[in-house]
Length: 390
Image (cartoon, rainbow, N blue to C red; front, side):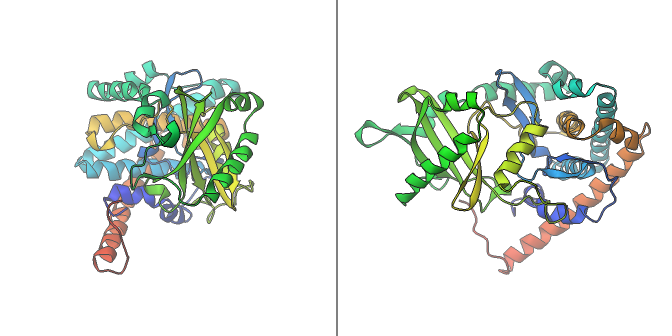
């Protein structure tokens, strides 16, 4: 979090939730993404192997005021844009057009039958038409790279022959390391059986064709620091030509639960998985959950044609194009889980909401910068311990 103001914002979902709890809201509830900053949208593969753009992080998902997601997205635009040295004038324009896009799409969804809203998706042709030429080139590169993010492509880099010819996950300290406690192997397999039971019957049949051959611990990103994450390597009939990597990621309380009604689900990972199914156009076919020694985990494929655009490369035009896609995906998520007609009616035809959220985003970006400076000062003065690097 000390790396930059944007890194701080990414890791400060709890802080922003506390601040948002004191802001006005319409009272209209949806299934919130919960951490809808700019970096939590990207390209991934559907079960039909199409590539779509959608929300891709659900650790904080919870029912709540739809405004919270919009404000977090708008603020992240301002913070990321400042980091990229984009002028305030251009950033105001980018945020305002993004919020206008959200409002415009909500009005469209309000005119559709509910089933049409559920089936609607942001296809690549429509996505590309919204971007500048540079932005289109960036997305094409992202799509090309996403097609290479598969288990078969990852296998030579992530696995190696072990003792007795057994295939094992390759250690890459400190990012990927093996467990030291042999008892963890049994616990992991028990955990895996519980996970299997959360999948639909046809997915269990698919999973049963694979055998777990190795487990290792994996370091995760900014927002998940302090939680446990593991990688499982599975092979189909012991064939190295048919690998499957699964990621086990710990789920804790949502950052929003201190300020909103708690989840109805007893398992935090179940909250994440159900929220993802509600929001996302097409979720991972092997997405499920389990519990291990009183800790909750959700499980998904590690590599499934997932790719996120590098926000640090973006100028004003590229940021605006990417942000419009984010706003469209977010509007669709809210229309699926809330009432689009009521939200659209609240938003209205004029740009009052666009202007208000733009002002909020600029003001909160300043607050985020002030909070970030306090963090850096506390680390520098030794009041807050910090270990740099791995």
